[in-house]
Image (cartoon, rainbow, N blue to C red; front, side, top):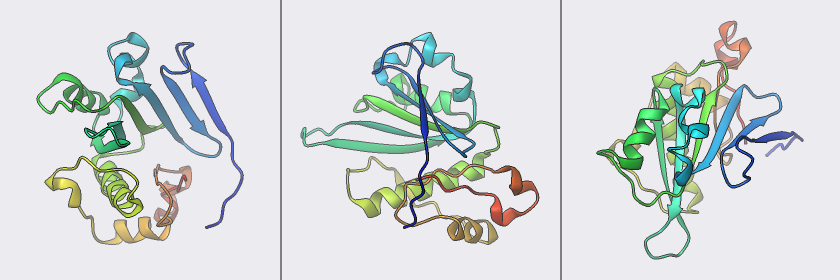
Length: 181
């Protein structure tokens, strides 16, 4: 795998390094929000405009047997209502203690994009065999056709991928995805 140097910018939004962190990578049009479950109801998290966007998210927390973490991978259009149902709604997931959300800074992702990303993240997590997955029957979603072929050409099977629309995507669909390890 070709690894090039890059920089990460981590902004500690509420002054607590264990609270909300906003992560950006150089030459990437995406943004990650990382926060503990306890911060969900705080305005520093609840009022974030990024949560009103379409994106993918990871919920992590301890396994029932105490032997490491377990992982749930989801998508939302927008993300906030989905996280709310996992926090205290009808699809509540009690295990999670922290969340990681990925969005495009230009709001360039749509429902089809994030469904594809969710399916690929689940596939990659299963291949990695690092943590047990909390998945439902929809986790085998597969997209076909030209869209999938273009995305497969631009990703590496071992990297954790988050794809976001690049500016060149409007001119050339084969450059529509940026792989971020």
